[in-house]
Image (cartoon, rainbow, N blue to C red; front, side, top):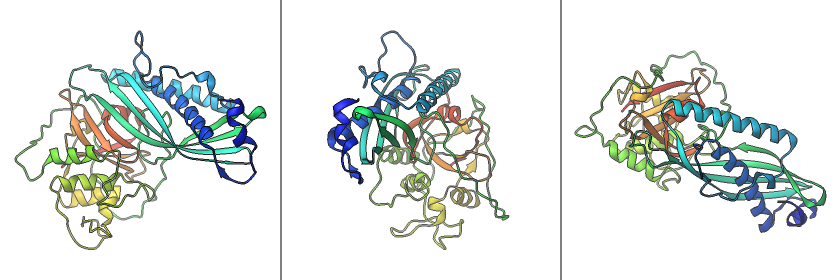
Length: 364
């Protein structure tokens, strides 16, 4: 990862310029190496295990700054602790595959800034037998590197660019902006217990007003992409609630027209939408005030088509929305969502990442 391979980018003209292809690919391998090590920390130790996509990756090839070495060592220990918490809830992973694509690499004055997208697949261990085959997620990172003597590059930082729930292999919870209370009263709902297992709360999956299978099918079709029929809000506060609104509409939720700022309305018309279509809190207020859904007492009671929301820092403002698209016989909901784009992530792994957050569950 050092030497002549980087000579051009480290010594070229001082103005900003895109890295050449070979250098950009090498930056990608650096990110791949670091992120693969994080992923591997979650995989169950077993004889002969090797990361299926990285049988030959070697961390010694990646040169890290002294501070980043310490940060990554702490990250690995944090993820190993997360693996232990998941095992206590009956979840483990038997294999993993992490790949990294470079979206943009810019070099200026001996400094490089690299935007990458990570795609990771974790294979669920069949602890009880009916776990999904795997969970997938895509997340974006920004790397910064500094050129060193002889043309080598040193990785100085790697930071997530997503605003939603952290990926299961990301050790540090994302910082969430505190929202000041405006003094008004809203139908905020009742927080749900996170004690597992949950008391039985069966849901009639067929014969009602909504098609829950259609909701799940929609979410799982578009988890890593965006339906071109809708605008996306990834760069405008996150796409999570826009995504669940689309899935709910696909399953039979009907629009409620009216002022876009009145949370009692819920609609999308191609060029505009109600605040409740895209806003985490506004969606909850609409849902409860219109009796589209009711709060569940325990978050583990959520079933296919139900919605889970999280208030990460318990400041009274909900931060993220997710849909259940699969539920195991053992009572474990698996969630699919945007921001970070994720397929069938277990509720256990989310709570293991955010054990002190406040959770809400809605029976749709």
